[in-house]
Length: 265
Image (tube, rainbow, N blue to C red; front, side, top):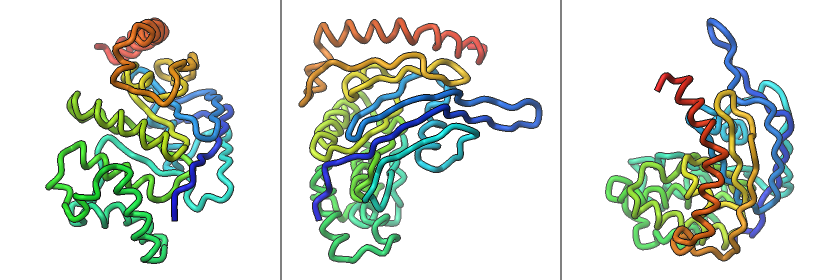
């Protein structure tokens, strides 16, 4: 059963998250309004502590907003979202093949369909030859490939990624960025991607959403003008890329300095 080349549309209005603490309430994110078209790749950048991960966790259903609404147009999807974290989260006692198919097994999907969909996902991320390997036998980059395969195999309406390549070395990060672009172009999923890297946001995304320092609000949304299909390695060396990177840094700089001041850095 081939994966559909379609993603969910997402409409966020007035989203707010307040954490109640022993002393005073803490506002994590405030008045977030964001519309994401089906199949778009959205990158969110902002200083540490601005609520990027909180926003992603609310989208994933792992946390509940204090106020505001999220509308997800994902009619026909059995699984609305899948999430990829910094660490792969692969179960160490399962091999790659079983890890990738685990979510389908827990949902009672027929064994023949699981085998077909896992095979497709492994081909998608280039792990077919490593299907019987266990996580400890894989490099960090290969474990993240496994995590991406496990996310895509469920055929999600949206893929939520929280700095999935942050722990990798520069070479593996560049390779995985290029691979992710290839996979996204092949599947047409909606992706919401959290990153601290302006370079990564420009190499991967259709739009870059810039958030303010705590509490997190959307400061500016920038359209990424680089056409697809996109060669992320070649793109990163272009003059247009460098100029847009500087423009985004000028928007983001005050927020980073504000966050550092709040943390007394």
